[in-house]
Length: 215
Image 1 (cartoon, one colour):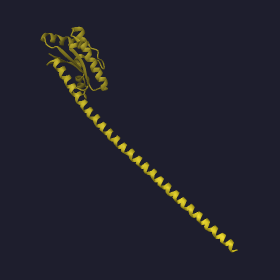
Image 2 (cartoon, one colour; image 1 turned 120 degrees about the vertical axis):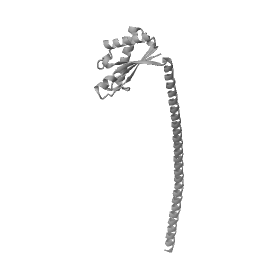
Image 3 (cartoon, one colour; image 1 turned 180 degrees about the vertical axis):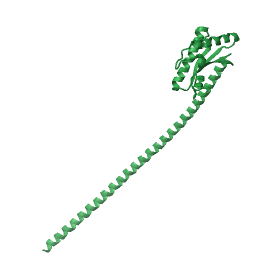
Image 4 (cartoon, one colour; image 1 turned 135 degrees about the vertical axis):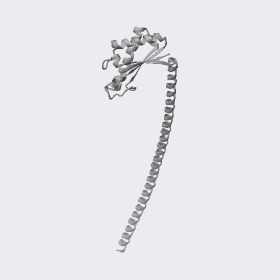
């Protein structure tokens, strides 16, 4: 009986030893896994920080590029302004000095509504204008400006003004043989009124063709 009791105690001790050994092994395994996990987390955090750094550098580069583009745009605008200024100076020099201006008012030229066809009255006025040029023996460049009132879309007004100016230029070329290279037809649309567009009389005054004579 005593021998059985000894074997029983020995078994209990063995079981307790196995449990203790298993517990130690499990604890070491968990600790090892935690260390590995910490290393992975540190690696991920390091990668995130590196990506954030690259993004900041990229944003800085974009900001720098944007500044460079703005600088170039400003420089180009300045250059364009200088070119336009020089071009206008060259045109002014080629034209010479303004001698006088002739105006074909709608009340006299009698342009029909939304029409650029020259009436007989308009042609007669142009013939008188050319006779004046011949008598004065002056003028070597003509700038023919088309003007409209503010009725309608400005896009159409610009086109209508140009068509009326071109009709005048065509008549001067065909009937009086004024060279085309000595004339220019342009349109101001409704942008240069000489009277108030709110009244019928004012709108009539604004519908006109002006011929600027340069020496």
